[in-house]
Length: 156
Image 1 (cartoon, rainbow, N blue to C red):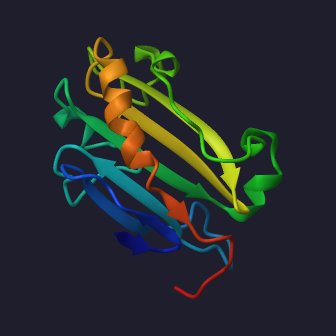
Image 2: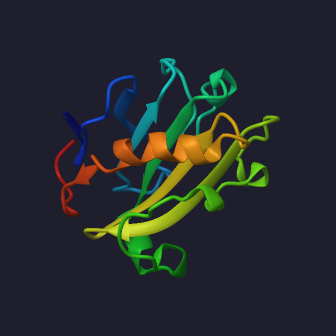
C-alpha cells in the first residue's frame, strides 16, 4: 500500500503509482500545495504534468493513465464539486473528445466530486477507445483500492 498526503492506494500488479504535492494554484498568502496521485500501466516519468503531460503519449492500446487531482477545500462548496462520493467509471463515459490533449485512438473522461470534505478531479485516459470496455475492467480494481483521510490541514 502506498500512502502519502492523506491518499492511499494498493494498486494491482503492473501499475506505477506516485503521490506527490504540487505547487499552490495561487500565490495568495496561506495557499498550500495540494496532493496529486498519478497511476499508470506504463512507467511514470519523473517529470509529468498534472493531467498526464509526458505520460499519455506513452500509452499503448492496453494502457491506462489516472490522475486524482485535489483542489482547495473551499471548492467543496461550489456547484462543480456538488457530486458526493467516488465516481464509478463505465465504458460509456469515455470519448475521444474528452481528452485534455487529443491523441488519435485514445479516449478519456473526467469527474469532479467531493469525498470526506475534500474536492477532487479524477481524470482517466484509456490507451484505446475501441478497447474501452476491457480497459475500464482493468481500471476498476485499481480504483477500488483508493482511500483517503478526511479533510484536515495536516502539516507539510
